[in-house]
Every structure is written in structure tokens, then in C-alpha cells.
Length: 121
Image (cartoon, rainbow, N blue to C red; front, side, top):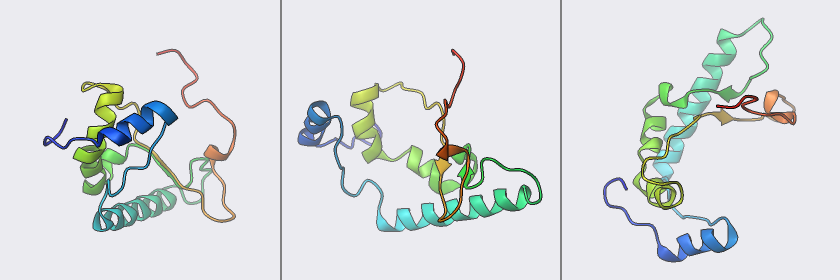
């Protein structure tokens, strides 16, 4: 657990019983604004880099930890860790840190039924 933040036992129980819960204020309003700005910037950079070429992953940003401080801060979020650690263990490993956005009237690879990792690891 990062920084000793403790998950609410009732919410952990709700996850155990229902398979999900809503945890309020995992990210502050300011944090959400920073994440949104960073994501919009990363999407714009990727679209510009691929301009004029086929780009099936439009509006999807891979490896977010490499795309700005707000994404690194999200990985280190103590509230998030207080809920994930009891479920996944203290030493869980993040396989992918990807954002998938779908603009109105737009499309990308995420809309199709697909297997993210079509191989045995």
C-alpha cells in the first residue's frame, strides 16, 4: 500500500459481493483536469505524427507512463492502490497502460471485437 492510505472496508466488501464498487474522489478535480489535458495533448501528437498514413489506433494512446507526469501520478495514486492491492496483491504487475477514446463519428481498432494479446505469455 502506498502512503498508508486504507481502503474503506465496506467498499472492499462490495467488490467481493458484487464484483465492483464506486470509489469517490480517487482523483481530484484538478487531477482529472490535468489527466484530460495530458491525454488530449498525447492524442493530438499521435494524430499529427501519423497524418497521411493509415492509423488504426487513432485516439488510442499506448504506454501512457511515457506521455506525461499526470499519468505517472495516477500509477502512484494511493487511493487506487488501497483498493487494487487487496485484490491483486502488493506485487502485481501492470501489463498495459493504454487509453482508448472514441470521438463522435470516429472509429479505431477498439471498436472491433478483438483479442488484445493473441499469444500465450
